[in-house]
Figure: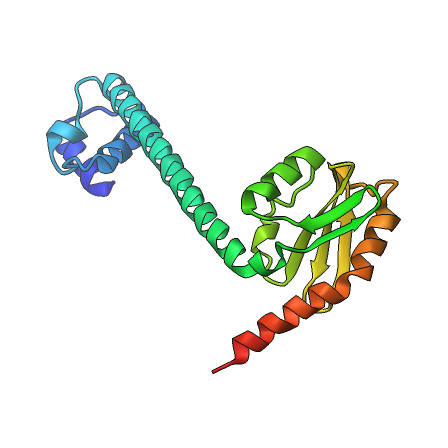
Length: 203
C-alpha cells in the first residue's frame, strides 16, 4: 500500500493503528473502491468505517456461502438423478434374479433408492459411498423372513463374492448360508454378465 501511504502523508492523515488501516484498505479493495482517492484512503473515523465495511463483507460472504451450498445441493440432486438412470440401464438385466432357499431370499437391489433404504436399515455405507456407481459390482439384498439381513457384493469380472455384511458391517448368523446360496447361483449371474459383454462387442 505504498501509494496509499503517500496519499496519507500528503493529506497529513495520522494512522494510529496501521493494522486496522491495512485491514480497512483490503476491505476497500474487496468492494472495488478507489483506493487512490483520499475519500477512501483517509476516513475520518477509521474504526467506525473498518467495522461498517467488515460487517458488509461478512454479509456478502454469508450470501456466497448460502449460494454455494444451494448450487452443491442442485449438483448432488442432478448427479443422483443421473446415477438412478445409469444404474437401471446397467443392472436391469439382473433384476429378475431371485434366489430362494428356505426362509432366505436374495435379489439384486432394484434402484438407487433401495441402496439408500438398505444402507439406512443396516447402518452401512453402500449408499453414502455410492456403491451404485460401481460398474463391475452387483449388489444383492439378502432377506430372512422378508427382513433385510445382509448386503452381498459380487464382482462381475470374476463372479466372486467380495463381501457380505449385515447391520453395522457385521456378519450375521446367516452369513455362511447367504454366501452358499449366492455361490450356488453364481452361474446365473455369470451367464447374464457374459451375455452383456457379447452384446457390447457386436458391431
